[in-house]
Image (tube, rainbow, N blue to C red; front, side, top):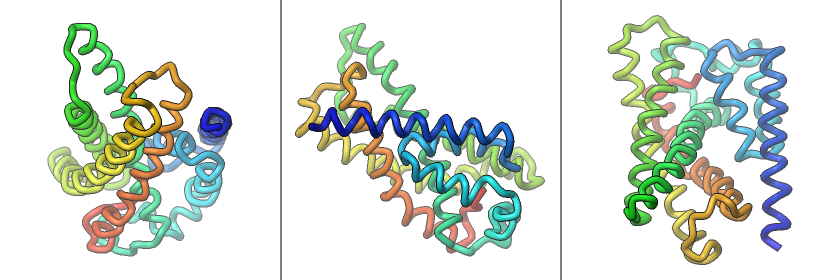
Length: 224
């Protein structure tokens, strides 16, 4: 039953990502790093990711109207649109973190090193943080005229909290999935495993939403 549900949703997520990617060639986002983030959004939000792209990312006029491209100093409008886009950046970092953690864990196993679930979560969190800082740094530099040091400092301030919360959501869900569904096996060859990862990204998105709302409301996290 779970496999019958997993495969269609995974395929739909992949199709959603490809639809967004295809549309980006004709309607590129004015903040270039978002051209990477939007297709990734489709992976864990099948079809909904496409609707979000259509409404929030496709038309520059809408971006300006929603204050998604204004400088950080006058941010503070915590609408659901700005929170969604900021959270999607954290999600993209976590996707890269998950994908890079899998081969690392596999390589460690080849050397008879079996990291615990906590250690795997820590590796994934560290990789996600580094990627998140980089993505946020690029977004800030592409949107605002800031020095390298200033943009890097702002990226550290804005991404650490929501990314850690996002990873907490992923860790809690995957720990439960491994215990009750995956039989404590991390097997990339199983469709169910990738489905659990897809769901964990959605759970992390829900976890991270309040964190981004808190930062944006106080002008600490510029939406991109």
